[in-house]
Length: 451
Ligand code: PHE
Image 1 (cartoon, rainbow, N blue to C red):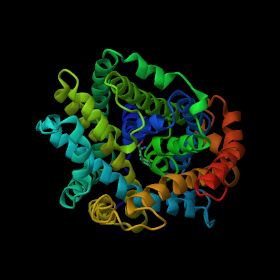
Image 2: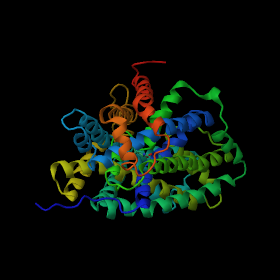
Image 3: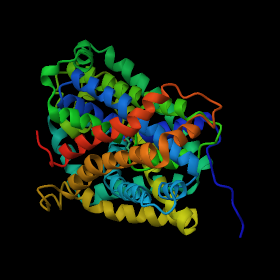
Image 4: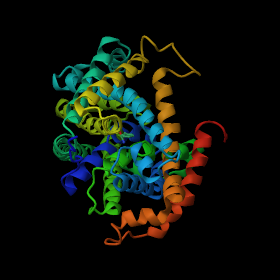
């Protein structure tokens, strides 16, 4: 048998670009602004930042540690660190989440790609502001278009994943992420220099705790997991491609800061513009598809900035979809010895098919409901509010109690050669605070406990 060396990231910058690329996605640019808007602005932001720092960052470190220690995929890693124990079920839940999340994530990413084509060709900018709602509904309630664009997203994702880690994920992330940052800065300057922009900044940064509800707190934690790509083994998988001499504490910190900074920048692009032109902040998931195009129409050079914006969101979503597909592909190639190309095409195809009902959830299948939710909503709810937090809980328990903080710290300090600041806090959070905190959220989110 020929032993092929396991693929890995080649450079520090590549690791950051890939992991930050995974974290930064629709969660930051599509979801974050609209949930901030729905939850009243600044106060929600503070709770969210708290969740990111106290729970998100330590869980990210834990995932990196598990992955790099084991040098294995999200399921194999648990088997390798604790052989013969049922902990690998955590990885199985993760791979299942990856299937589910990618199946609906690719639908929303598909809408974005459709909007890229509509804004680059100049059709979107010609739609009258009061028609934009119907225009968006027309897209998402169709049959051919949502499925076509979802297919394009899965195709592009598979195209990158087939190429592996260095030549695929790392190479493309290193090109795409700086473009994303550049575009975001341009848009941010445009937005904050609009007349009346300061009201938007005030909304985002001035906390009004009276507008924050208990559900908002729960949503903040769930979103911290989603946004940092935690709880399903993405960072375990990426961690397994990181070399033994990298400082994982620093890496986790940098990725967390990058993800949070981009979410804030997206907020700084969106809210000043929304306020400057007098649009509502709480329009929900349609914020970037209906409200923003209306904003762009009222803006000088709006068509140009609109195209830039959707290209940016498209890039961000693609560096996330690849990270989700990689979780599954890594598992199938390593555990079943299936060649990478074959595994990628097969799995991307299956996820595309599973996603079709989600793509049709706003039209042909909008009446098909289980527990009052469409396919799309069920997938979104189960993954974001149940599976990811559950994954984060199990990962913390695994590191805190099964593998052990002492062993984890050996990996974090590269066998004592680098320092992990606040390692005591990391241990306490991982053993106690994260499991208890996440359990409470989970019980609320699933309705087992009610307000
Ligand atoms: N973090 C990504 C985003 O913000 C989504 C994601 C979730 C990616 C879970 C991987 C795993 O869009």
